[in-house]
Image (cartoon, rainbow, N blue to C red; front, side):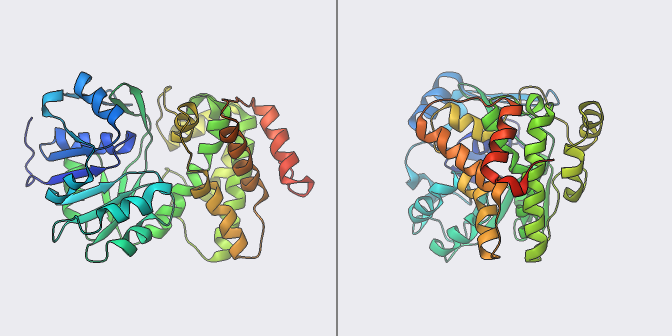
Length: 349
């Protein structure tokens, strides 16, 4: 494997899935030592096929199985300089407990997770180590047995203290910035991620889903609701897109031809990109609905307000996952159902 000009880092990916394998794979392809800690099924797939990476611009890399270090044992983190935590939000506490007492002195823990509260939760258990907040501003999907594909444009953001890692990631092809306003970045990503539930209910790739105005009207209502609550709370947001988030609900309601032209200027996306929540439902795994749309509902409660649209999306996703049946909601039907659940006082325009 070709070495980069950066000092070689020893990196453990704790909870390797789509994001962990892609980011870890990019770092390994740049010459860093990476061990992937994950499910046995992933280990078998990597052992058989190696690790394949690709992106929407046509870049690709294949890491042979013989060069992929995979483990099911969390003790593997003991030798790491940097631990990338990429588990689902519901598993953060368990992962934090597992990491506590196992890390090398001076090791840095980096949360590359959806949601808002994961870094603080990690810090409560890992008190002697620096916990970095990270936000992945692009979509990654598993498109083969051990093939992970970046389907949308975007960059990584890390909190201060991760300058060396940011440089290594950028050198490895993932533009990464270090910021001191990560709470605003987290909330900005969450507002965009409100589409994960809409996409999961549609059952469509992101590009096809966003090409349907009925789905966009549902998303616009969810984002408008969230942004209003964030303004009320005095919480700034940083957009991960090439447009202010305050404009997004308006852009989403545009007729299809106008929206399509506007969307091309905001984010590049290939036809196979889809949300992680759609993958979770398809594979029968728990979703992160409580940590995305559910976080908006919790914010509303703290403010003594309501979030009927996001609450309706939480309810629908829970219905789908509890039924253990894959239900596809056509755009007009989903819009009517959200109207019904959100109550007549918050009808979608």
